[in-house]
Figure 1 (cartoon, rainbow, N blue to C red):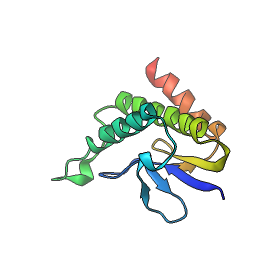
Figure 2: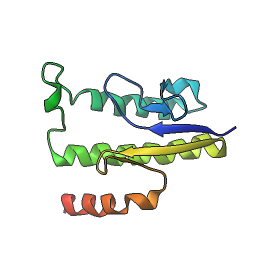
Figure 3: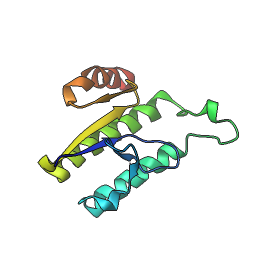
Figure 4: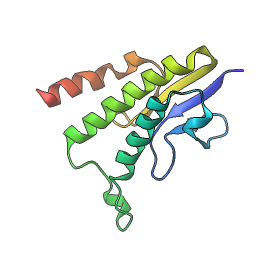
Length: 120
């Protein structure tokens, strides 16, 4: 049976979600390399760092550049998860830029263009 996983950061949670039951998934429950697990945890730690629990409504990255770097790492992690988990898993990605779930890389084309424009 195909296991459906969503890569999406959320505050104080693991960034992997079971798309069928909605709960977050501990990365070491999946057949992932230690390097990928470490990257996932570091990516989540960055996201946890953008919230001020005294003023949660003000959460956000300090700059567009930081948000671009975060999004790029998310996309890279998404591709790595697909590679490591293979055909037994369906991995989708929640894009912070588009504020929606994407299931194919070509859905992110406008993000890539935006990233290039922001860096130039």
